[in-house]
Length: 301
Length: 225
Ligand SMILES: Nc1ncnc2c1ncn2[C@@H]1O[C@H](COP(=O)(O)OP(=O)(O)OP(=O)(O)O)[C@@H](O)[C@H]1O
Ligand SMILES: [Mg+2]
Image (tube, rainbow over all chains, first blue to last red; front, side, top):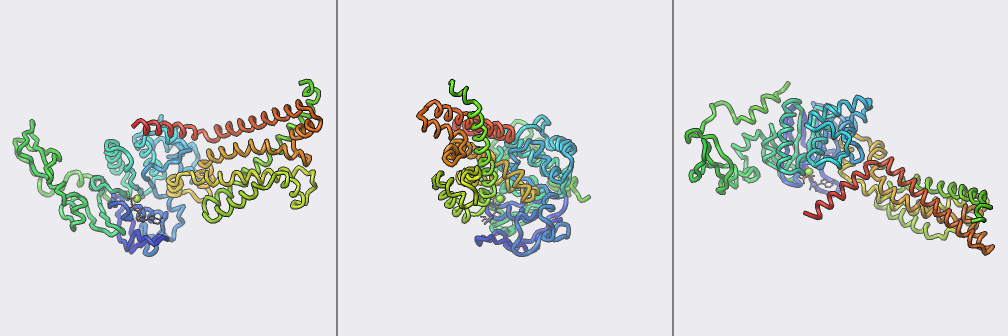
């Protein structure tokens, strides 16, 4: 569990990036920090591994104030994945994945064997192991970045817009991969993005931030969608623009048992199952399927 | 040509001296410019001071430096150390700016992510910043290498100029062949040094070629898009 207690960060030039921030990030769940550019997401993330130290307030990991921990040691037990992968361009893929174990003095043979397994884990072919990062596609590089983040089997994985620089198809692929991984591994993931759809897809807890890292709203995706706390949130998640309020477009006759849905602006947004023209209601009690699935599998162990 | 065979011992001896006296300042200059360049890269203020200082040093005529160094170092005028020190100063003067540029050229993303995964400052320098500065350092080192090999000849005026001796001697005896031989051998040494540096770069930085070709590919793709 990661806790922010009254954390403020003012940079040397006077920028107040984070203003009195409180948050509890539960273990073994994915928490997504989402907000527009410059609202302090990266700064928050970097305070968890002491790349940035708070001006005031403190950050706890499992009840321990991290200001008391040695930064280098702390970072080696926290996975970090960033946009543009941040891989070492002068090291082969396998050495990149094994970076931290090698720093920790794990014998090379052992570290490499584990690195190859990790390539499997993130869905990369082992034949890529001896390439340099510049010889991989952007999506492959991000997978290597994730593998490197997992190399020391950390409890915590920090991800700063890891899929921000790849095309939409690859991004969707990587997102599904992360969901699968998280179901298997159950890490405490803190994920930063400015894409609200990505936040709702990946997050067990979603935290919507305004400038200065002020929390506009936090909750499960369903809670936020059902009850946007204010106009800012409504606007940010798109319900203000009618993007998420979908209605059946009766003018379109579809071939099968589907009805076409349109958003508030009248654009086609998807289809819904409607056998014999009737939209099926889910059994009362079960929430939206994708979300309850995730929570079940990643539940506290 | 006959002259060369008759004086082969002399020419080979002078060549070896030339190699020794120019290799030393190149190596010393390279080692010295790394901390200096790194400091200049990190701190704006010292960068300005360093670049000005070495800029001035570089404008001192080499002969003047050769003859004043003995009084500064307390050495005899014919001591080869004078020439080595003088050329090392020039080497640093040329390389300091290049080394600062080399460290500037290391992508900030990469050093930040190295910090993020838990490199200590020292291991990050030696295993990330220094190797990634390598290609630009090498480019500068090649300039220094050629400059030093040719500049050493001037040292012949104070008795330590390697093949430079052939220039003075050939000029005094009005014997162009000897001067030509001196030039050719100096050139060969400069080229061999350069090839050794290029080869070392290939061996020590196999990744830099794959990166360069990836860059070119990216530029081509960008250009045609
Ligand atoms: N080292 C720094 N020195 C001064 N100001 C900084 C520094 N790092 C960040 N800031 C400022 O702090 C604010 C928050 O920055 P941060 O990088 O946390 O934003 P972000 O939410 O991650 O934005 P983005 O989505 O663009 O990555 C910005 O105004 C930024 O300019
Ligand atoms: Mg950011």
